[in-house]
Image (tube, rainbow, N blue to C red):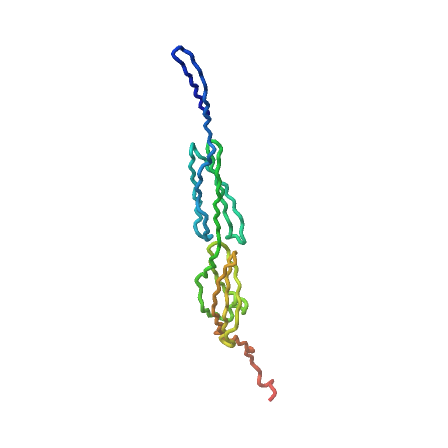
Length: 205
């Protein structure tokens, strides 16, 4: 804005002199911008996207935000970058960036299962028994499993220890073990020749 001030000096005889003063009002001060603090959060936690605020020395302020997501090493590991820009009526602007780091540091949790299992050996061969299902739940993603088994005792019953590992998409893992006893409680099926009759007269004596 411009303010023009015209001064006129007049003496007693009416002689006058005039002069003009020009005052130019300018705004070169950018708004003061306040943004949310950076933070790190677990992928399963809340991720608040709080607003920014700004004040200006002369007028109204408009705040814009541009959000960018940067992938990390796994699906549940990433960074959110929020760039805020506050602009006043005269085009003076201030910018600042908030960084939100999302991490997955939580291992899967085993669902309820029976730690000691007894099965009939006819329920399946050793390999199928080895993979009796045990499951785990993860806070953010899918779970993959690996299992190994060792023989604890042979004969009847046959005992096995299974060592399970559950791993999520970010490499967090947890382990557990299960004891399996194989019993054979089924009697053999006996097949005998059929009954028959022989004529005594025809037999060699």
